[in-house]
Length: 245
Image (cartoon, rainbow, N blue to C red; front, side, top):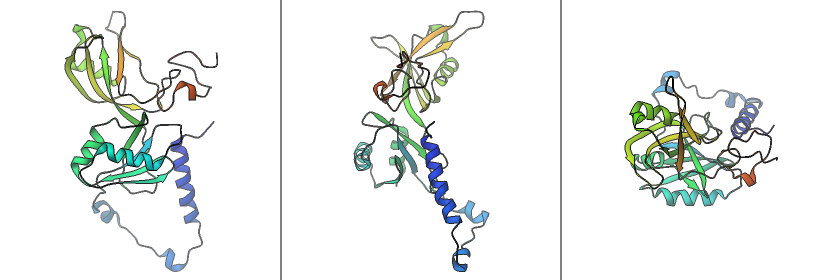
C-alpha cells in the first residue's frame, strides 16, 4: 500500500533528524545552546504563518502556484511563499488584514484544486500537523419548517464537516429554499451527499447537500483531489458505480 503524503513528509524529516543526530560531533559542535523551558515559553510566537498543501495527485509548477495565489490574495503587504518539500509550502504574511483574508475568505483554488492551510508555529523543520482540511460553503436543502431551528441545523451541518458558521437566513433559489453553512471538510473523507434526520418514533428524513465552489472530486468515490478518470482501483465506490465493473 502506498504511503500517505503525511507519512512521507514525516519520514523525510525524521530521516534527516536521525542523520544529524548520528553524526560524529566535535566538542565545539556538541556543546550547543541550552534553551530553558521558561525561555522557550516566553519567546514571542511566530505570527501569521501557515503551511500550505495543494490537494491534487498531479504535478504542478510551484512558481505558478506561488504567483497565482499572491495575485488572488491581493495582500496589502509582502507575502512569503517558500517550498519545504514537494507540495508543501510555508506561507507568511505581515499584517492582520492579510492574515484574516487568507484564513477566512477561502476556499482557495489553483487549477480547480483546493489549497489547504494549517497554522504553523515554526518550531519544527516539518510541521507536526500537515494540512488536511478544506473549508467550504455548503447548502442544506429541503429542510422541513418544523426542523428549521438553529440547534438542529448545526447538527445537520456538522455531519458534513466541522462547523465554522451557520447562516440562519433562508436563501430562495430555483432549486428550492436552503440554509448555508461554512464547514471544514476532511480531505481524505468522501463528500457527503445528504444528511439524515430521524425524529424519535418516525421514519428518517433525507436532506440533500450541495457544495459551493468545491474542488475537483472523484465521481466514483466522492474524494477531492482527482476526477474519476484519474482514479485507481481497490476501494469500495460510495458515490457511483465501481469503476472495475
